[in-house]
Length: 130
Image 1 (cartoon, rainbow, N blue to C red):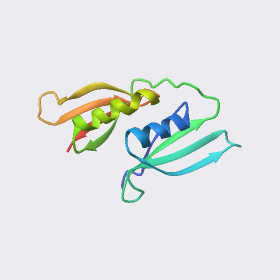
Image 2: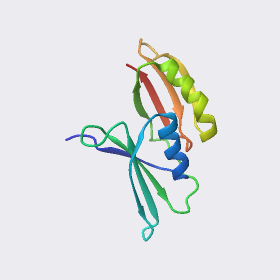
Image 3: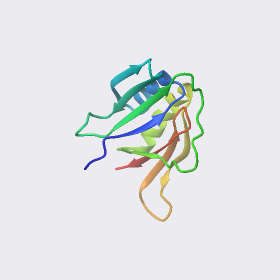
């Protein structure tokens, strides 16, 4: 078994595609529009299945906001240079609705460097320096 994808419901599909491609450097891999079922899907990632897990963004027609709930934690992305990555996110994310919510620093009780950002819908993304 292996992890294939993670799905997030988004309120503005193009804005979210722009965030994940322009801010986090993912590639838009494929899209599907299902007008009869009232939804659209976009798959993004740093590579395709089966070598890489993908992120599925789901837009349900007419839904402009979701309750994120208390069960969702975060998506984690490995980066080579966390400070440079946060500088790039800071420069690009504001125009697309994302933000840095925890500046780079060591994880509590350890040496691993992490930071947190949010996407335009408020989903948390942890950046972990390799």
